Image (cartoon, rainbow, N blue to C red):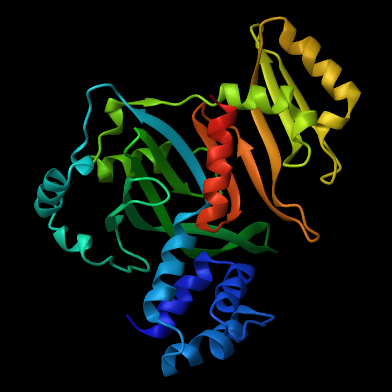
Amino acid sequence: MGHIRLLNLLKGAATLAIVRQFLKQRGLASTAGSWDEMISDRLAPPLDDGALAVNDVVALLRECEEHGRQHVFLYRLSPGYKPPCSDPARLKAALKALNLLGLLDAPRFLEMPATPQIVDVRMETEPKAAVIVKAVERREYQEFVGQTSSDGTLTKTYKTLEERAVNVARVRRDGLVEVRIFRQRNSSDYNDPLAGFLRLIKPLIDLAQCEEVSLVKAKTHIWETGPKLSGRIRINQQWARNAFGAENRLISQNPSRTLSDDNGSLSSMEAFVHVNGQHTASHVTWILEPGPPEETRNVALSGQAHEYALGQACTRDQYESILEGILKFNA
C-alpha cells in the first residue's frame, strides 16, 4: 500500500489533534496547521526514512475509521445463538465460502468500491474479547452549487460528491453486539444503510437472531441524575413523549451550560413524565478531559430505541469510555 494512499485515507478518518498526539507519543515533530502540511512535512518524511513504521500508521487508520462519526446500534445475542464469527473454525469456513479467508491475515484498503465490500475481519482480546467485521462502501451526495434563470426557466446546478463510508460490527464474547454505521450527510434515517450492512455480514452474524438493547434506561438515568453528572456530561437537549402522543422537548441555547442546572427545565420535565411519560432522547456533551482545554464529544441518544450517535472522530479509548458509560447508565 503506497504511503500517499495510506495518508489520504488517514486524512479522511482522523483529526489533526489525534495525529499530533500520535506523533508526540513517538517523539516525532507534530506541529502542523493543515492536513497538507501534516502529510507533507510530518508524516511522509518519517515514513520514507523508516523513523515511523507503516504498521503503526495502519493501526492508527484502523482505529480512527472504526470509532466516531457513527450511529451505533446495540444488540445482544439471543440465548442459544452462536454466530459463525464467534468460533474460529466456523469463522474460517464462512470466510472461505465468501472467498475472503485472506482477511484473517491482512485487511484490504479499498477507497471507493463500486459495491459495499467486507475489508477486515479479525479477533481482538483488548479491550474486550471480540470479533471485528468491517466493510467499506461508496456514498454519493448532491451538493447545491447555485441557480440561474433564463427566459422564465430556473436551472439549479448540483455537484456530485463521493465519500468513503466505513461500517463496523463488533461481536463481543460477553454477548454484546455493536453495529456502527458511518454518519450520513443528507438523512437522519439509518434504516437503509443499517439493513444493507446487516445483509452483507449475515453469513458471519445474523442480527435477526439478536435482541435490540433499548437505551431508555440510560436516557432516564442521564436526566434524573443530571446534577450529579455535571462534571462528566452537559445535557443540551432532552426529549420525552407521553401516552397521549405529545412531546416535551427541552433545548439549551447555551452549549456551555447543562439543562440539569435549570430548575424550570427540571420541574417541567418531571411534571410531563409523571403521567405516563417516557424519555426518548438525550443529546449531551460528553466531557472526556475537563481541561483546560476541555476534550469533549457530542453524543446523541436518539433515533431508534437501541441507537446512539457520536458526532466526531474518536480514538479507541474515547469511544470505549463513552460506550461503557452508556452501558453503565443503562444497567
